[in-house]
Amino acid sequence: MALLVSSWSNGVQSIPKDYIMPPERRSGDFVSVCDEIPVIDLQENPKIDRSDIIQQILKACQEFGLFQVINHGVSEKMMEDMRVLYHEFFNMPVDDKLGVYSEIWRNTGCSLYTSGFTYAEEDVHYWKDTLKHVCHPLEEHTPSWPEKPARYREEVGRYAVEVRKMGFKILDLIGEGLGLSEGYFKGVSQDQAMTINHYPPCPNPSLAMGFFGHTDPNLITFLQQDQYGLQMCKDGKWMGIDPIPNAFVVNIGYQLEIISNGKLKSAEHRAVTNSTAARTSIGTFFGPNPSLPVVIEPAKELVTSTSPQMFKSYQYTDFLVDFLAYHRKPFPRSGTPLDPYRL
Ligand code: OGA
Ligand code: NI
Image 1 (spheres, helix red, strand yellow):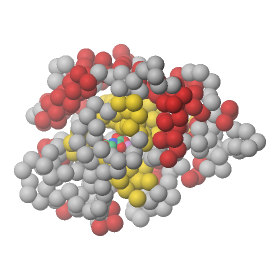
Image 2 (cartoon, protein in one colour):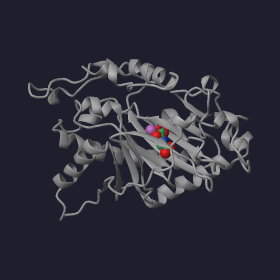
Image 3 (spheres, protein in one colour):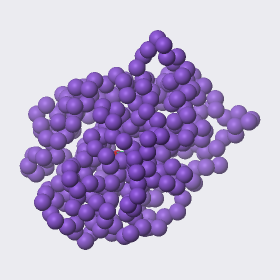
Image 4 (tube, protein in one colour):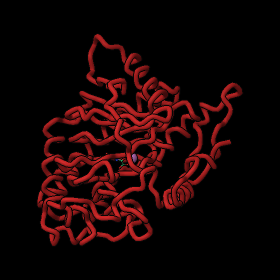
């Protein structure tokens, strides 16, 4: 528990040695917020054709692998309640968090851990604490969630249901744009997990990192963020993502790049810290159940004589093993965890 950054960093004037990134792993000074990252309005409007929205989404997925959505159907009140709830959660006394604390990252159940996937093996640590839990089916998982704040399970449960609806709405638009059969993504086993990353104020953000550059291994991610800190890499250049109040950042994961047979790109992203305020991001992840044998492969409809299969079929569990092994490799690393799966 003593390891959580939020348990010892309050008021520290400089960062401990084992949080100082080597220069090549720092974010660098000149990353600016990019106003080209698409913001897509999902408001149902008789004047706007559904096919226009689909085209905007597809273009965003092809060019950036990441976009923001507004008027997505999850109420502002619910999003605000989440911000308040997680502020309270991360500020609770350490003893109140013991029930979910874990020294290691776990893929299943509920855990509150610090830094990257493997604190004990890391040469340098990341300036973040993370609460992670599965959300679907809800009744099966809520008993593992935090007991405090007392309203946690009820409020987060309601939020998870609303985000699931929004998620499938967006996946339906993507599926339609790709030419997949109706309800394609509902037909694939679709687990749902939440990862809440908390980045306490950091006395020297230019020496530290919040979250290393990565691409999400799952299908698609919906992220609510309250402050600047998220960056994405496009054509080798890092750019900042504007935190639009009550918007969701939508991230294409490796799995969707594969299902789309490479038509959609997944986005590499990372998070930086700041010295003035804590930042908390609330992410919802759709993807296969990591404990079940689920085969991932390009959708049959998208493999044709003019568009040959670009990725092998594989078990999601095997991919996760490779994904983690990649992130345990010492720096500098080359390639991506997806490379061995390309044909
Ligand atoms: C993630 C992630 C970004 C953030 O949890 O996969 O990329 O801003 N989070 O915390
Ligand atoms: Ni991510």
